[in-house]
Image 1 (cartoon, rainbow, N blue to C red):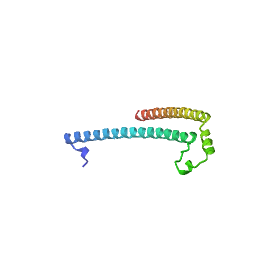
Image 2 (cartoon, rainbow, N blue to C red; image 1 turned 120 degrees about the horizontal axis):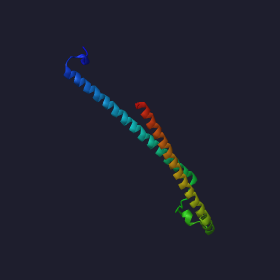
Image 3 (cartoon, helix red, strand yellow; image 1 turned 45 degrees about the vertical axis):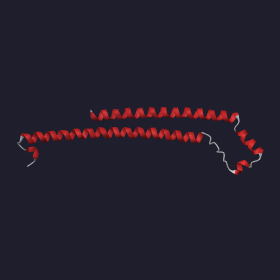
Image 4 (cartoon, rainbow, N blue to C red; image 1 turned 30 degrees about the horizontal axis):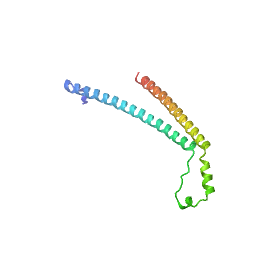
Length: 134
């Protein structure tokens, strides 16, 4: 004999409540999984944009040579030291500043683009969820 087919009104009421609570829990679980999916998507998009920005900065930004403080640096002839100091000329400094400004603008552009794509994706997901629940 099936429990749902009993004539006892208390048991049937408890079974209905249990079924209703199970449905509510399933709905909450689905909402939680949807929110988690949105969060992970956001994290991936933002992380990807930041990683791309980092790569661009590393590629476009000139690498500065570190001055070593070994005996070789002390024993260099004066002509070599003067040649190295000429590399730090105002022109090089201006070019470096231009490169930094371009990198800043590229970063802002990429983050805006990532934000727009993320907004489009979230709107599409919201519409998809609205159509599924209707």
